Figure 1 (cartoon, rainbow, N blue to C red):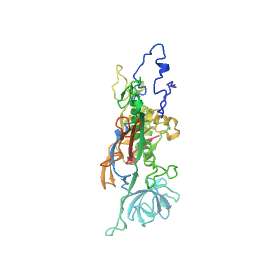
Figure 2 (cartoon, helix red, strand yellow):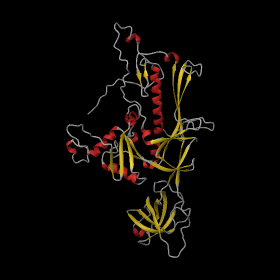
Figure 3 (spheres, one colour):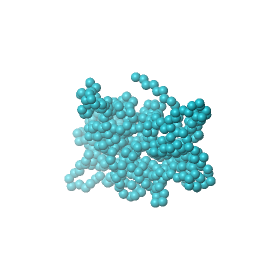
Figure 4 (cartoon, rainbow, N blue to C red):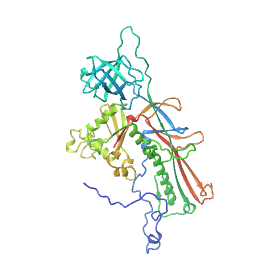
Length: 477
């Protein structure tokens, strides 16, 4: 079924006083023979227009006094690598990458005497490491089942194999021959805050001029003065910017034309937002259909498999657009043996005298709990909803899976381990200045601060997003 919309075009705000902002007195007022019946109250045809609220559900805000935030995340505990069979007849193995696919340098944790599992070429063997020289990516193993790897079906062409250290075996009465201790590995990440600014200005004459339309806004402003409406909309839009910038921002790449900051402070460097962090350090899925990533359990189980390989956080939040939310509902409803007649979805005890509930707010699959919520930002045509309509391929974002709870990380500024939400926003602040959300008024209207015959309302914030444990996040394209 096709849906055709015939709504009147309503553009975004512009930097000018237009005919849409004020009543046309000549055509709609005193020039007419009879006074029109004027509906004073402004109609709120778009409902709640703001999209903020996502970060308040899944994150916290903390102050910082530095120019950047640095945090460290633990590495994996066990020694597991990707490797190539260098010479199957000599049982030599070349370690190429860690298990997550990052290129491995000459430093690895495999030592002489270690027991390992090697998988590749369609078989898995158990072996003991006989040679593992420091500073060399090549090791030699001795299979338990035969003399050489070639005797067990391995070939020199077997690349991208897997090797796992699961223990060690040493002779009785011997000294330790491993040669060196293994040091834990961690990864350090950093992000810098960006400065957001906006302003609204109205002349003193317009402040003192009453209008015919009774305005209203998200911040509760009301009355017959249009500047109340304009200032309130500017404030509400800026509050949305504070959230959208933490979601969409990216760092400036080396080949970008944007001027990087100098020692004097000029220039901009960008900041890593939520989507950029998941793209570079997390997971992405587009589903089999390329439209939704939740059309059947097979596709969803593939998501669970990725989580199993990482932190396996039990509780997760799903923030999705309308199409994906309905796909989840249809997927779960199809599991109901009584759903064929269209009268029963889930355990709702639906009857003919009540409204049929066809939606699900949460479910459990395997050892994971998922709580689903519609995300207005992905549906509204004036925000990501419109961008998604113009996106092609996997560029359209349908939702995001975010782990619930907190993570333990080492804060290098404070010098200790802290427990924080996986997502949190850092804003610049000190004992005398907080840049979480600053508002100040200048001009000669009200409190006089200058000789400008106007009132200027200024907005400013300086903040950045910290995404910890991005390997537990999933971006649904």
